[in-house]
Length: 368
Image (cartoon, rainbow, N blue to C red; front, side, top):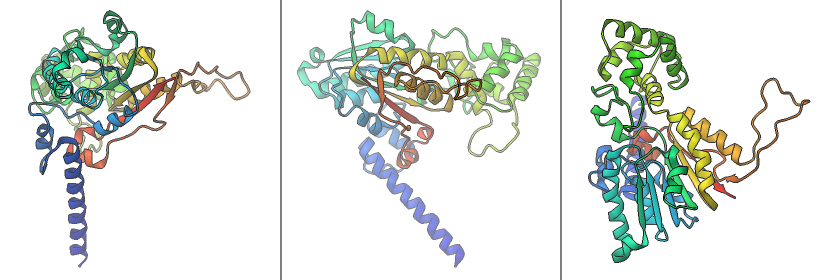
């Protein structure tokens, strides 16, 4: 009887998950019966290699914003961008950034279709599309070059996309063998192969510790250096083999996950780019304009949280050397208000459809 009851509970929970998944996919992708995750990723727009996360939450963040000039700092395949164009018929100028030329080739036709579908014969005159092949950290200079004197909405979807992970030749995935590259664009000054074969052991250990948050960083840095002394590490599979078995229980997380994350962040200077773009984006916003940022790991989210608090007029927490009886840090000027005091996270239905969304966090602020 206990076994039958347990089985009934398991079946009920599975049915509930399936119902949530189907309901989410019907609303998000327009699918009648999305029976598999892969089907959900291609139902709405065939050929799109990436599912934009937290779409409903992003659109809701800008629902009351008159987005005449919109900036998408992470264009990708154009998922968020297309949805914003469709949702905001008042949009007059769209600016999209991506350092990857292949993203522009994928996104442009999708955006042009969305423009034509929502604006008809006057599409090209009522909505200007400006696609910039550059990292979003160049936002300030690029907007100036485009004669943009203010924007109403900015979206940043940080981290690596499915477009990168699913293409073995880009070298981002430890699940597919490919060259050790990991560059999001050709402007990156180094590659993963260069890091693992030429950087000192101490530097490799540092990026595994600081960027990968890998607690076994010393061990793995030593293993990488020992392996490269025998033979240069040129492919993702060779790097996974060099890492070997990592102590501890990993569950559903691959033991190479944190190592690949740390190296990827170092190759593309991802954290430095986030530090640079937030003040540039806030500076570009008109009063009432909003900035929405989706992050995927704690390093990104802590930067977004700290920078948002700074521009919201919150003083940095005092250091250990400063106690309450000493002069406290002066609060910076308040130029934004926090729309999300705690980050929004994906629904369980979205995670069922797109498991890669599970670590996403959305934070939003508004220019005063």
